[in-house]
Image 1 (cartoon, rainbow, N blue to C red):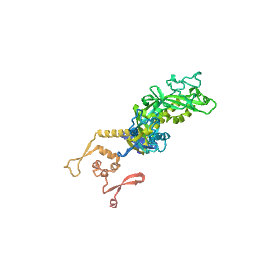
Image 2 (image 1 turned 120 degrees about the vertical axis):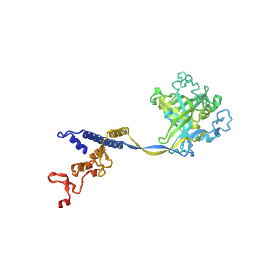
Image 3 (image 1 turned 180 degrees about the vertical axis):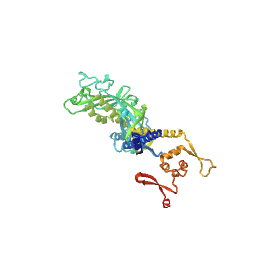
Image 4 (image 1 turned 60 degrees about the vertical axis):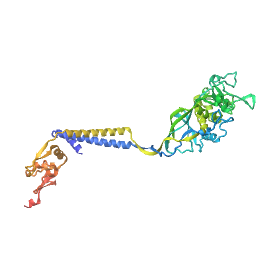
Length: 494
């Protein structure tokens, strides 16, 4: 209100000329008022746009506790193995005398509730499949880093690369595609004149295809493979329709399968699979896994892990997973799906050879409320506070640099003593912020000491309030309302 009144007075046309000190005081007060209220409005804007959000903050866990969330190879399953073939490859099958190795693989494929491991696909790591703790492991609210195994498959559709001709009839020849073993036909019911085609996932070692009869033993080198390993996939499904399945395909020209002979559809694919030792990080809030490091596994380990697939333990599962997409999908979709399902199935089947190991960097994620402040109001508030601080510094510096003068005041009744020094700036401040000096100047005592009282350090001592007069405030008749002096009652009686 004082700033408003001063402003109205400053623009009044019939006022006297404004002194410089009035202008400076008015401008300074106006700037301070604007700045203080701007800071208040910016603070209100900030708090009205601020919102709370629930986040998970990591907290260190008990260093002595066990966190078996990593995955490593169980060397005990190969203890005492003395065959020239890769570990667990018997003459008639894979791990025939160790059901504790085989059964967990099927449980992992089904993602059963008692599964120690499950296999997931990391879309942001080129569809790498990794082994992680299964449904029986409660990860709760823990984040951690762990080692495990990964498998990435890269397949290509061969149907458009294989030779189709009238001389071959319904048969094809994939030699020119680099897979002379495809397709693989068998005698139906023992009749060599009647050939049939079954589903297979063949292993390829040194250019030789095998796995259809004696599993890993069909391949040269006792079934040992390099890493990456090579596979050939042959799948055929019956549509049970009397018409060509080509009429059911949304894009026959870009289909990944052959539609003859009716009522069958047939898929041929060549794949390269790479086994890796990987390090992953788990975040419980989003239930997500992130690939941190990837190192190619040894050829020996790859030879062990691919064995159940070459023994055709993965074939029926892959056939079931691929039938619908093979019939309706285009080449890119079919190959992408084949990459994912083949990698997951192969790794899940081999998960029985793995065991849990300790995770590292384990932290418990504790839900916490945090305030989220928008950038604009925060920046605005900080800017105004900095300007406000700069203004305070300027006022302080101006006051510091202002030259002060001293008034020498003799000590009353002690003329032999050194006179007192009174600061002109201090007196000016006192006169500006306290009404008592103005009252004292308006109603002098007339006792010859008014000059001394005007420079007192205390505003109370500046006012004359002697025994013969008193100051009052109120209505003074024709003089209106205001301050007045009044005689003491004692003086009136006299």
